[in-house]
Amino acid sequence: MTLPRSIRPLALTALLALSAHAAQAATIGYIYVGPEKDHGYNTSMDNGRRFVEKNLPGTKTLHVENIPETAEVEKVMERMIKSGATIIFATSYGYLDYAISLGKKYPKVAFLHAGGLKTGDNVGTYWANSDDAMYLAGMAAGAVSKSGKLGFIAAFPIPQVVRSINAFTLGAQVINPKATTSVVWTGGWLQPAKEAEAANSLIDAGNDVIGEQVDSPITIAQTAEKRGIHVVGKDVDVSSFAPQSVLTGASWNWGPTMLKLVKEIQAGTWKPSHVRGDLKDGTVVLDKFGPAVPASAQKAILAKKDEILKDKFVVWSGPLKAQDGKELLPAGKPMGMEMLESMQFFVQGVNGTIK
Image (tube, rainbow, N blue to C red):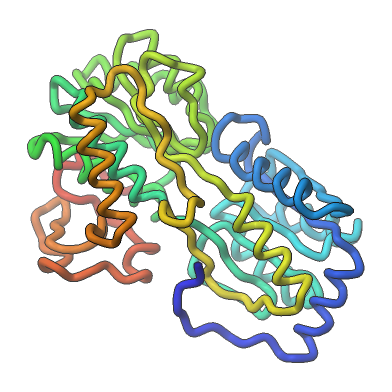
């Protein structure tokens, strides 16, 4: 699904050159900010790469892991281009400016970036709204929590993460209007020691369900299982690592979107835009329920999911109030894409600061 947005049209000559070049050399580059086998965010992107490779016979993919969101990624992309890549998936939030810069130098290469609100003549973005699934997962957290005190461990306060925290909290408040979420920032996408420390600190403070958005959820899930509390997953289903603790989660299914974009580029029909998936089109999946989620709560969650799928309920619609009580959206007003994808506020019930 492509959301309406004014974009700079690709010049016809550049478009023809781009598509012809892509068709001649089906080599696609993928760049990950962490290890491809983190069983989290980077694994979800690598699953998408494998899907493309499987469904486009003859396609060659290049992939490089553990590339920081610095100028180093630009060098990696350039090396991929020199190795024949005509399409590059830059899969981490901080890669966008480097992709746009390099796109000017290599107009025959198509750059596809994970999220963001900027495009170039040959740079587009792809992402998916996982907030619906995080809202539903929050409902599970609200139903299972005995204290009404929830925790959330997150890497960086970028809009995509802030959205997850807010959606998780709003969902929990459907079940328990007094539910609160305490946020701990780790300052890194993969920081196992800090993640374990944050989880133990939150548990010691009485939080009995933890949400998370870091690259690998394994440390947090296993710490929760060891301490006898519950956790909501993100990016991939991690229930196998903590079968008693995981309630549910929001997982990605990037393959079909990636495949569609590659085919459009090779057919010469692609134009840089902001492509967005969601729970409805299957790019986002609500994970199966863990044994701790009561049957009554499962029924309520699935009923709400059905409302979302039928457009009878919209998570990001008013009334909505900020952490300090200020009205963000009046009743019935939906949140626009600009506000949603630049989100830098917490809703009521979130304890913590965006820093």
